[in-house]
Image 1 (cartoon, protein in one colour):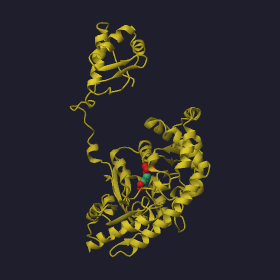
Image 2: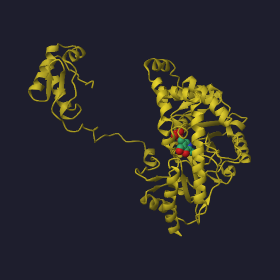
Image 3: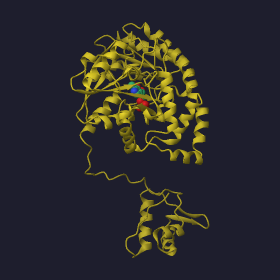
Image 4: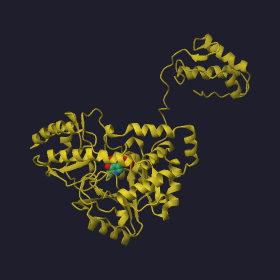
Length: 470
Ligand SMILES: Cc1ncc(COP(=O)(O)O)c(C=O)c1O
């Protein structure tokens, strides 16, 4: 480790070095077995004689803190306690907003049947090809090339690949210049806040809706308003006056699962045009579509250039990669590029380069085709099993990695989820997604992370719990 040593004045230099090294060993910053810099190197860094450093090292060796091996270097011998933490007593306090916003959800590890929405199946991920491509992108020459292309909006090859991918698979109108590569949809939302919104602006979100988006808007000082949804999606007639931006999941409403109807899409765009409102379209999982006629994204039927389209690789690849993108009209290109730069310069380059290659070689399309078959079978199985549970009404849905079902008014869906968890079955209650309206009650069945035979076993357990409720 590159140990920090600093000297004050020119007096007792060996003593100063001795005391700093001893303190670093005693408070655990230097651990047993760790090598100290060679005397020659430390002397050069501190611009003092090598002998002065050697005097300090010798004293520490004599006291048993260090041991020296001729030709091999000097190592820490004595164990110190765990490193000291940052000072407990600090005058610094977070802004009040951070008392109101929290991390969602509270994750419980060790769930045996994990039906929590949002997770793809790690076992379906094509590790071999990803590893091979990624290894190529980590070669020094590849890293140099990538670094030269550290564009805040993303690697040009990846932006071209994404523009083609969304154009072909979802008829989104996008050129490479319209694409900004982000660390997932969450960062795309953060950029939208920075570029287009002011603290105090009213942001309308679906109720029930996706909590991380709502929390982000709240944390940025927006006034978040929940707007009810019905069988056709967000109720445009219930949008509040003074709304500056609307955040929607029209392809597969999160968490209920129905698509927004075409008339409702047109109504929303018309409303937004008349009131000069920004429309944020979160299309997080519709590469997985199992039937029914796909409805055009808002972005592709909007004639007015007011829709920001967001996509992610969290479902079709893995959420841990943290790769997503936004598609923005030319009037916003410059601002988004700069916002991306000031927030964290650009997305990690080797993964961007690997993903571009993965898409261009057809591997992403192949992976989506294969995994879609598997997810469709799971989707059908869950619908079949849950479809005739008493009291439960499935929300019609033909896409994504989860299905929702509502429960009668007065049901304590959260208690049900707690009981399920005690039996090793993890899932979300619909009431957890309420914003400010009365909660829709029910259960969300994510099948992304549960293999088919396990779906049967896990749901059989859950069925008993639900039956016990009546
Ligand atoms: C509605 C919605 N949007 C976005 C995401 C994914 O976001 P990210 O790309 O930040 O992983 C999810 C994941 O569960 C989601 O449910």
